[in-house]
Figure 1 (cartoon, one colour):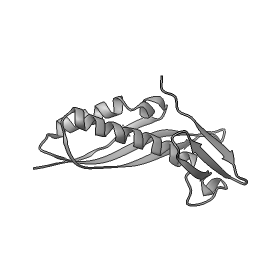
Figure 2 (figure 1 turned 45 degrees about the vertical axis):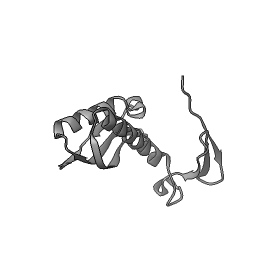
Figure 3 (figure 1 turned 120 degrees about the horizontal axis):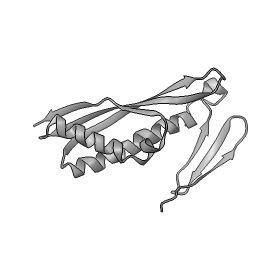
Length: 141
């Protein structure tokens, strides 16, 4: 069974450093609005990015499975935070806005591939946030 790990170390103030088992390392902080440092990865950024990057990789898998000639693909992800009465908050929704350019297929097949990508995304399937996909699909010849 696959397992993934990382280690974080406090570096003072609202600053941390993360070491991933795959060799990736990076500084992170809280958002500036929560006393963090600007221009750094935040847990909130990482959460939205985890959903976006996992679905991205599954779109590439689905494109191959559905025999799509993928010309280009990019995806904007937006996380919507809901503040609760007790001052806690959570990501109520993550909206993915993929823009796919596909050669010689149909919009219906591309939408089925996107559904498969969403279904098989380990991260998207693991979070309690609502995941919404609002694609822009261009079919080119």
